[in-house]
Length: 179
Image (cartoon, rainbow, N blue to C red; front, side, top):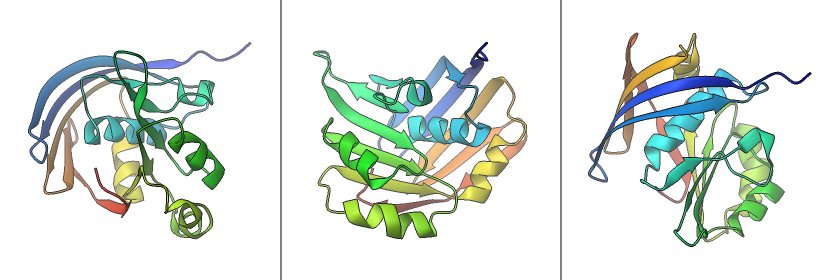
């Protein structure tokens, strides 16, 4: 019998000074049984970085034809496809062809991945890739409660998360494109 997804209740206070976005949001996110807490934290960071009122979580790991997050138009066109992790170059090319804007929130040990997977697709016109510091991501994901309350501030390209454990600076490095 397959394991069920784990639900997380999210209370998010988002302050994105760079884009003049100020939102208090409450939503539920499902964590796939094979998904790590780090990947869930990366999806939440992606949600904050690219927030738009039409942005929604995709089925991700349970459906390879859907992204981690996406923004769709009212006529169901995919305006922004957002992946997390370290997809291969074929996956990035496939995703970029299905949307107007393709973004990737990469994390983990990225040195080898950049040369083998990212370099071949740097010429994609709609590609944006941001690397999240692995140590900061691991700190955010450590003992992540099922009822999560984050205050996120983005200013001058810097991302800060405040939770019940204190404030965490999450260094970002734009590898391709921009937000």
